[in-house]
Length: 287
Image (cartoon, rainbow, N blue to C red; front, side):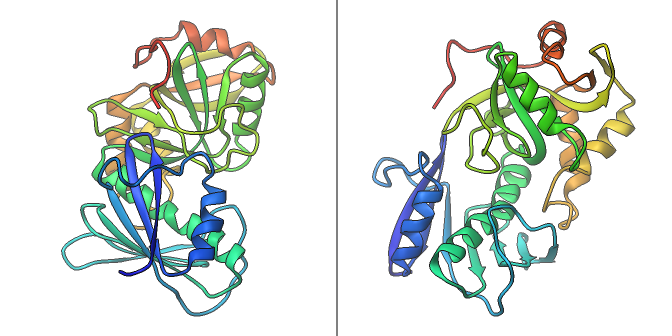
């Protein structure tokens, strides 16, 4: 495709956004501020072409909840969202996102949101990780992801973890990468309005958590079948493609999935620090 390329980087996962619409790429670079990288240093992991789609719908900075999926020939497929559609190949190497026609700033936000199913496929199906509905905090050099639907306590968890001195990476969406044989949280510019740490970085994932409200903090493992169901219910986009159950099973095999009981105060951080988990605290996070 002729046009300009915008190189975006997620701590080792480099991808090019290709479009003839230069103002759109400039706006997208603003949205992805801190994640724009030098295209001349390494080859791209993923190439994304920006096309166009018919129709017009409301668009904002949050991902749409309406998702359809049509399998592609030879693997991969096409995700249908209110804001347009996104097609990705089986290997997560090439994708096309087609936002509905609108003004440049809104189109850029639509492209931003349409990248989510592409990243969910690339990280979840291809790279052994996932895109997860979860709030993420880092304490002791290790990341903890509290998964759950809207209203389950993710924002409360993140707010009070931050008050207790933990770094907050996000309150609602997190990317996990498993390409190196262990699960790591990858910094990404999605739902980071209240984050205390923004920008690229990688942190070893210690545990996946499920919230339970209680006066006294505690942490314990639950039945595997329940953990798998809870995890699968919080894997956006890949559920429409019929991949959520397999990805959820792989995730809970890789790291502990535990129920965290907590009150709205930072006391649960001490419980997290004493609980067994995966991942070693690095000297500092890898960029």
